[in-house]
Length: 385
Image (tube, rainbow, N blue to C red; front, side):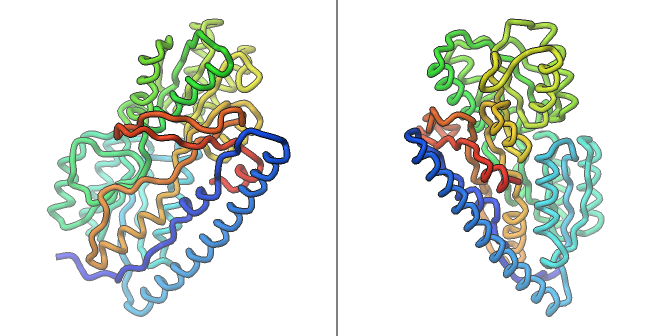
């Protein structure tokens, strides 16, 4: 039997509050654009202040409860690795939310993109008799046995970011709808190329770690537009979500497909940075004023900086700040409450140009959705993760 743990103290979800202040900027006069940017800045500042106050109050209440009971919640966290800016932000978010001040004893393992090491880390958590396990799975399959072991030990598992597709023996998942990210990228490229009068769309893709749910979902969503629009996808190779990987793949592309491509899709910002380096070295112009349209995912601070500068045309956010939601779920479980099986993060789509204000597409649930496009300003960059 698991030991009795602390009663529920809800942690503030800073990411959702912050992102709610990021609205789209409609086309129109310079005055309207300036007013929209000012409104965005003011909303972001207000949301940040409110989120900070809520987080401080939650942390104080949790700390007081832990001190009164003399116990903490022991959690094991098996992270993918440290391959990108996004991953660093994700790790920091979880470590901050599951801190000692918030009533947690966190055992953290950086699995360095080694699936075998991640399975071993989870088994060690079980042996250590932690109260809860948090996993960001490197790959989406091969989990049923070890999750069964955690279940037999009475240890609830919370999955974040990437998904587990071959087992339902986890309690909750927090993350992004990766297929919708790919669909949104495809919908944006369709509208953008039509607006610019670009008829021939020749695409190169630098994908993420093969077999990860982020790679599978983004490829699946974008490929639906490749098929429906008759685009020519010249190649797709993995850059493993790293800058070095993106650079190496793009160097190869520049040699093999010289003069034959006008779109590059990178499945995270770090790959996009590497692709930029390779195209710079090869004399290939890209971005808003270039010959090649550059699309990215994640929308980290450096990524949005490049969107603002016109190097990246569009960046589709994958929100890494799952820590507060993770803490909220664990606290609710500790109090004997029922939690949702899935929690989706709030995520905007960022662009350099304000010519397109929104995109409409059919999402992965079969629903027609219209979502705003957010032209990047310096205020948005400053408020990013």
